[in-house]
Length: 201
Length: 192
Image (cartoon, rainbow over all chains, first blue to last red):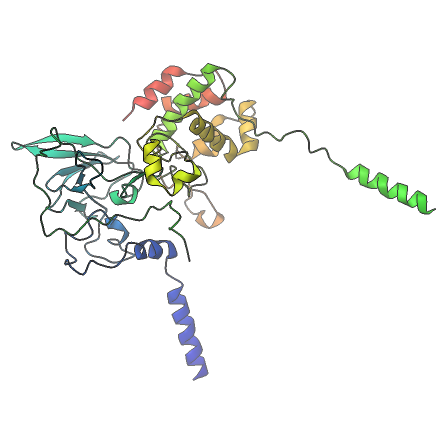
């Protein structure tokens, strides 16, 4: 009996020891699911998708890349709002490319089966203008390793972030896209990984 | 007898004294000797900021080898650390101010501080510049296959420099061992 208990304890301890405290902690900081919205393709706009949608955390579908597009109203005091319907084009170092259609809540993603990028990767956001895809904004830097756009594109511009992914509008007072669907959850964003509140207990 | 022993003890202590006055300096190509050195390293830094210093790689406070710059990690004031509005007012955010001279100096120190002894040897021409870890890694020269348990430091970002004879490597080499190749730097920086 004692041996069985000892063995059980050892197995349990080994299993607990297999966790990744860094990944677990950063997911914990993303907070609970918003109870007012379903946990579907619209959920958690702004947050880093692949932090949960990966083989380790197990959220389905598994994602290799994912993010959310926003628009900044002309008044800088106003917070950015979700801009849906754009196309995010990715180009990896093997020359592979893919166009990802952002949904009505601005969320876009690729599964590893669709796109398994070789880093570094480049990206452009395209707008559908009269049936043609036209470059709206290009990312100034390469992406070195992070599949979640929201990991770097956090809520505010800081010494560690350029702020959210913002699409352009020729006339910012009348953006050429509809406002986000009313059933989109409010943006949540990721904790700034460099900020003081990101600590390991 | 006691005086003799005291004197002997004092002499022994004096013999152990070491002069710590001269400052210990890590060998590093200077930044502020003349205007050209700032311009030259600015080119090298631009290349490294673009290829290595993105926010998800070496533009992170968590990396031992940190790079600062316009589109990546910024050199921030303590007050800006927890006050994004102040950072925004001062343009000290990723994508804000152009890379500052202070950030150039931090990048220079970051490079030279990585392997100070080898940097001195490379500057003196005793070893090849490409033997420095900060070039071995982006050149993809470290093969850790079968040596993962030996603490082999593979480069997670893979090969981000084209090759030893390519413009990117020539640009960096020319900063450490002159002559500086302005053309190689410009060409390397222009690569998308």
